[in-house]
Image (cartoon, rainbow, N blue to C red; front, side, top):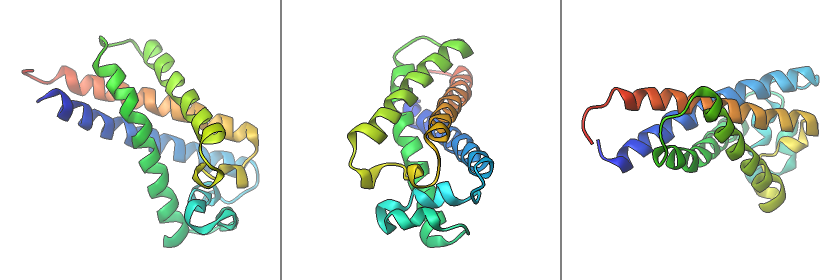
Length: 161
């Protein structure tokens, strides 16, 4: 398998794991704050529906599907530079993988909340406390690391260039 295709596949795997792990943590964080389990996901659709998207407590296509699709695309987006970095460096231990994933998650947090316009933030700020938002980025780091380890194991089984 060529390098670009390998990195693309790894990005898909890593981004999907990161997306699912972060979404699961968001459910737990919302419940811990007395919110609906779906409010953080629904709030991510605020780029389309405005800040009131975070007030939607139930599942619907307009908020939940758009919110999760946006969240998943964002996880894939952040997995891409992470996997490009991993492809250029030797395989790493779980601890080094977590270190590198934490760096990417920190950059994602800075970009999401300090660089992009408010309409392009994850929207979690309309539902969750700053502490929970920080925890969500820790979850992103854990998800990227776990996905990176899965992708690294997949690469070990390949034959050829």
